[in-house]
Length: 504
Image (cartoon, rainbow, N blue to C red):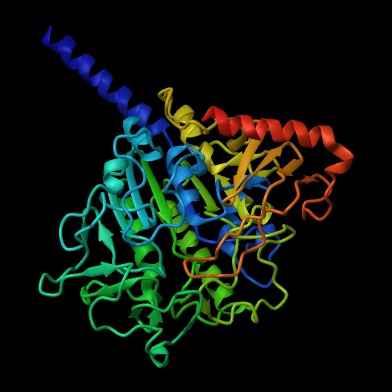
């Protein structure tokens, strides 16, 4: 009897190991503000991205892939929750001291994969809030990534241009000296540290659009911070630190299925390339940090090769929203474009309801499963939740991921079509249905660049517009009058998606 039990346990153990071996590792490399035209394989010539281009050669490159919103916080919220961000209040661009906006205990991409046997890690930009309000930066900081499904995190609390400019590992600030406690304010100035507004002569990068509060590393930030001098990051080293932590996570979990959410700081402002990349491009500092972003992708790819796990790793490179050139600092990015077009053939960019706001680079590589090629299937990052649930043999709860669709067969290149419709978002919403794009009639949306900006970006037109993207990808010709029935049907459908509260 004992032999039978031991044999059964052995068989079960072997079966579990075999099952794990069949599950691919999953890495989502989410870059920041990288536009459709910023990468070589999408048409860039003045910026060199050999690593991402190689990823595309070895994988499936999508030409009609989208994030869920044209700005960072709502886009990231949707990626992790499978919910359109406009359904939930408080998912706009968050200050650095905001509370966590994803409820602990809810079904998220990491919690679902964790339930499926994955070890989950988050490295890089967070910007989804921490704690439940009134964060004590000098103690345990929670809820945060660990409370929504990640086993490990090493993150920037918000963005590079917002305080606090420190790293958070799991629940605590890294390297904090208790004798120099951190204080953060998004109201009035705290402490006696100089600000960009009061001391512009101390800035190494001129601030615009409200980026002139506490000066850290010679750069003005949004918000005020005092203390924590031993914990503050060095902007020139940010990219290397995040890659190092990502590589360490991969190395520690190489023998079992893992999910890594690596959210780079590049190419978000402030754009401060490390020494290896400063002056490396033909497009000034913005081009330099794009090439630095490509270098980070290359290091992740090299790590997978070195550990001999690349074949069974599903690696996705994408961006949180479309591109922006002038965004808080006078860093010379506009003057240095040198003919480069960050959005490629698309209209608009970050903050915009047009295609340049949400149509982004999107490359899937899984050598053991995905054949190299190009796909024009309509897919969205919001679909990761349902698609990866299907990949790992799980069924989502009925109330989870209300807008996440299972497009796994398209992601793997097995089907040429995916979504039938997609709602695009930039404080107003628009609807994609096949080749058609409807921007409904309504008041012009005045979307601000950041807090303190007074100039509205290129957003929703005053009158409803309909575009046929199959022959007008740049959204230059409004064909609503010639296609009134299509415009009306899409308007009704968009209203229905809003009113029903879910689209899955």
